[in-house]
Length: 318
Image (cartoon, rainbow, N blue to C red; front, side, top):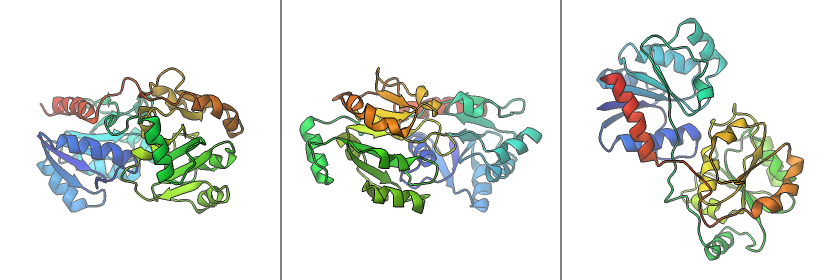
């Protein structure tokens, strides 16, 4: 099967959609021919869409993606838009008026619920995967060594976050934690100067840029803070939360981010609070849940996810 992937796939998995696209594309390559196009490479998109049995667009569904899909569907009848967030209002307005002749793959029911599809096109649910062999717990001695490696006191608790220092993600809440060491691994993408300034003033350690062995940061942590309150600023199923749980690290999040309930963790693995003022209060109990085994349940590998996606895509090619 010839699969055309449109999006950013560059080997780095430092952003939600890019993470999903990269892992799926690598799995597709094992038994298929995969063609790649960037979102703005129009001549290449046209050429590859004509050659493909299926085209998959990995990008936030906005007006650019709507325009792109309207072109691609004229050349490849088996076209899919992959949703890891709700489509934005521009996309919805255009698609409500003139629905695209494509199908949709979504990581949550809610993200695709209101998207109109034409007769013969589908809306399908797929899960996200995890590299369980990479994101795995380590021994207490290894955790101690990792804390020392990254410049932390092994005798004191450590709270981390892996993501972007961008506006709207709530990272400023790290400044309200006073009972633990704190670290943010920031991709360097979408950086907001004010967020970085607040973190620096609060003496939160920031690692900027892609970190190849990011699993070490999860493994040494005692708790993971996911401070985002709205799915507008992150993908609907936060992969970093799954990676933390897989490393045996308990998670704190906010009740307002309802999609955290979509992640199946061990009992008590995810603690939800109302506001940042409660963080110091709940941390001692959360840290007790740090485990030497995975706290993530019912999650498959990227290989299993890719095979499921391929079955759905092949049905439309048949």
